[in-house]
Image 1 (cartoon, rainbow over the protein chains, first blue to last red):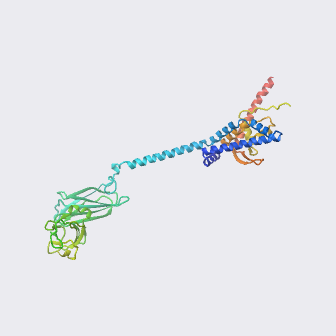
Image 2 (cartoon, chains in turn orange, purple):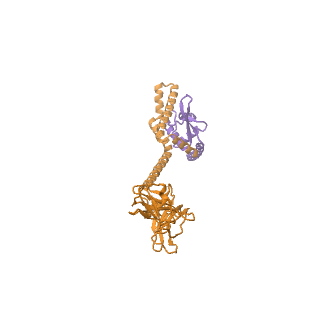
Image 3 (tube, each protein chain N blue to C red):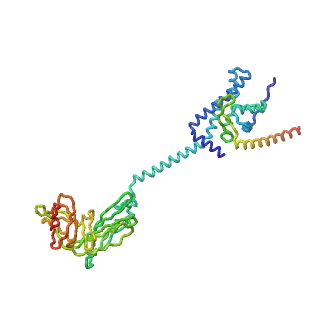
Length: 325
Length: 115
């Protein structure tokens, strides 16, 4: 029985129903023509003339058209099961395809739901739950209020790298909090700087890690009262020159810096006398500052904080006398 | 000359006769009709038109299978042959037929005794 089913399946697959009907009709006609001609030949051999032989063969056979129709019906019904199955599978596939399209396109057009909305980290907001918090105190342990906290968070979401800056000011008790800025379950890095008037710039760098950050604690020591003096190459004081401290290396060799992208809150401009206080360094330190003359591009200047005086003069030309002040 | 009396084919016996005709060798439709005619010495002459739908129906049921070949007259003809399923079916039909004949014989003998 299985062989029979298999044979009809193969027959159907070779020639599906529509083409099969034509071939079957042709075969049945040929089969009946053979029967009639054989019958007529026998009658002819018995002495009938050719015309009479054919006539007798036809009469004995009966209604040729009805027989052909009957045979076709029977033959095609052999393939009807496979035809119905074929139709069912096709219908199922079309339905499945339609369902997939329906499933795919609405999700393309729909705005992302709250749970899947991406945070600045490049990860969903629901995953970006890490806070940056800490305390800033002075040398004597007293809290330092209104200290600028400049943080940069680096993340590596799928298909990219993100670097976002966040800023805050310390509260009267010296604490600060920046909420929901990194994904504790993913890898991230944090660079954070604390900068307060009359205190040394300090920063920390947290290398790639996962998990929740412990609160930071910055103890800022008093600095020297360095002033940058800007003047033109002709010696005229320049007002409106922007600057911020970029980097200092302390006596132990540790670097403290502010990332350019997070520096906006601490950018200051020179006054009409061309002076800009930058009280975040110690005498003798190698430091780098970012400066921007009016109409010019941001540039860095490396200089050594003089030990004997509090003013460093800078001109637009990055000449050798830059550090001579 | 007296016309030879021909018996009507009982309903359902055509399949059995066709199966029997194919038991020894494969035949085309005309060959099946001729075999029945010759074997029964002309007593049973099947309606030729009814032979082909029966052959196709039996093929659908898997009792027989067909293949195109060349006839004695070197013409293309469709040959039918018995399948294992068809052999089993023939056996069943012959048993049923024998039981029917026995039953009818009993009835006829009974009538003869009474008469």
